Length: 142
Image (cartoon, rainbow, N blue to C red; front, side, top):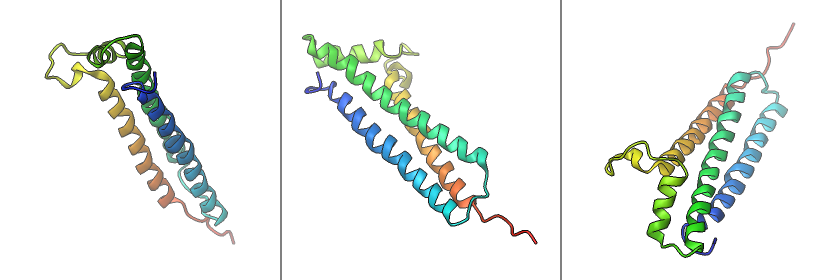
């Protein structure tokens, strides 16, 4: 199932999760740890938690949608369907279309949902950079 399109999206989802999800979380934890070891540990904990939550939701949602596309589409191709039938199965079975107009963006929902999760992950990165830039050393008590 993984050897032909769209089943290859299962492998793409796995490697994306491993690289962006696991190594990305490791990189952010290393940055926060380094800043903390340098004494910069006063900052907005709410912003840091929001960054972590949005990053995880974005990465898990995007890779989950990729895996769903690969599973549904690859299953159709593996059972003898053509790529055209596979694309229609992906369009209708994962998340039902919100529009019946073929020219509408909402006619094919999996790419729209994928884009929203990727955008959420990018927003989380911006929040992470803002959170890191706001970290400062605690005021010295006299």
